[in-house]
Length: 123
Image (cartoon, rainbow, N blue to C red):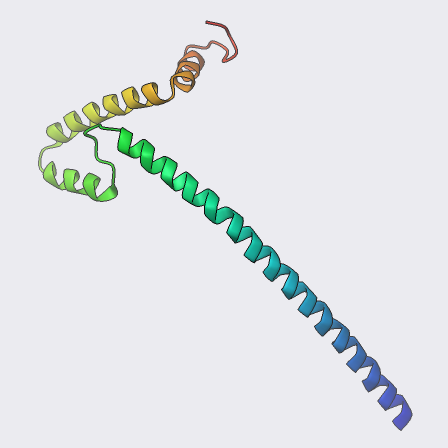
């Protein structure tokens, strides 16, 4: 009986040791993947951030660009819905103009799609 119990404990101990080794290997592999993936994405994120910042700097429109600017403008026109609608209409027109100048091909295809023309149709 004692022999049977000691064999059972040895088998359980062996299985637990195998799980610990497997866990250790898994943790090491996941850590390696996470560390190497973050290094590659960091340079890509910086390049993308710089590109976006350059695009924002080139845009000289008078429209609000940040949430704080939008909230400030909303507070300024809080009691005057007519003035607020006038500003929104002006800013919407300016946004469409900016969109059209930055992405002429996309704007043209979007306009064609609205008119029912296929996007692959020639000019």
